[in-house]
Image (cartoon, rainbow, N blue to C red; front, side, top):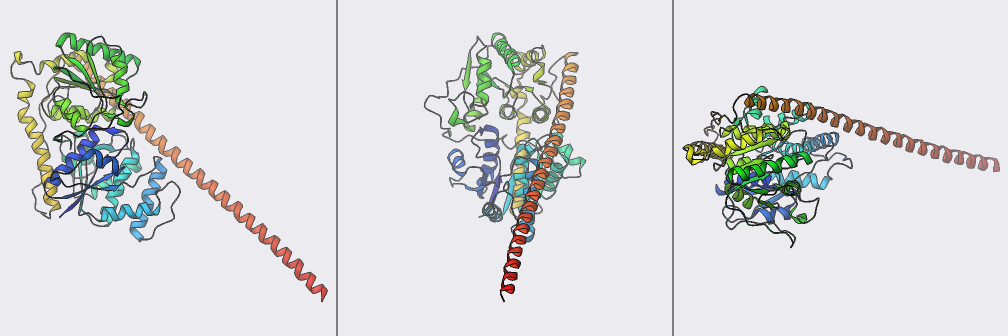
Length: 517
């Protein structure tokens, strides 16, 4: 039986719906083809409890990630040490910040025990989450040295990357048999560097909830509430006090004008701390917004991906500052309005929403308090108004089938290559589609200008941070290195002085013996 390692962001104490869904959807496909699945995770017990069995009922195997330090200098050095070990077969001297030799050997042996590697989707191939980039680069490095076929699926690349991190990413992509990215911006990044890639879809697009649904374990005081009949599904991961007030007013407007109750659905949080203020992730932001509302609002704590996907699919509308609520909603024809806080989120949400022709239904979070968010919500609701003709859900059916088909074709291609079919037909890029206009002029122009400004300023700030973070990290590393050399020199000096004392004592003793003669 072919053994496939699937790597994704799982096993975190802070549960992330989208990360879990991408990994599970990929694993489910390959398990359904008869592969024996090994999942890379940070916590085997955690993942075993939350993921369940594969498509055939067989339990997955798990491989602990080689965890990298957060500091850029330390993670760069750790990757170099791993490569030194792979190249020579001899474990180098390891600094305190690196994983110990036992973990490195076990990790390498675990990767070498599989027939193929699939690095499943995510938004972690950047300097913002550099330690996660290096975790994947480590897997790719072992695969490269041991000639294990590597496939990279459903990725966002950048946009914030230091030069060194960009080089690490490039090497990883070039070492792969095939690469698929999930938005045109990432596809352009590859094209500019002569890297072959497929412009495809997110790995969680076809996520299939278990039956019965898997659940998270909460404290006894926490329960998932009943949902209203018609609702807007809202996921917001950050908002200051003014933005929270503006969001509350926007959601009250949505209820009064369109009859949609608000369901706040968390996508990140620690289920074990779901009753502890300050530890509940998205729920904290949602609660601050709900406190200022007078119309119906339901707050849902972090749920298993199974429940989250079901709730998204039941919504009449999605309002989000996160990525995967858009993935889950659009995959079943639910209109989406996105409020983006930064260039990273804007790139990803623009990518998925353009797949379905609604790339104009995005505005910066900073535009709250203007007319644009409410007008976008009006336009989104009207997309599914049967009185205006064919609904968005109906019109989108062929496109949804096209997106799902493109993802299925990509995975089938990967499986055929894993199975040894080097003549497998390469899938085609997901074609571009016409974008529905969400705003009339001049607001359309204003919104586009605001998005361009957000991209530029956020990217500048992000790149400056990445450069500064790396510089300070290496300064700290050099300082520690110098301090170590100073301590080494001091130790040598002490040893020399001790040797001089012993020599003097010996000479004195020798002289006394000579004189006694």
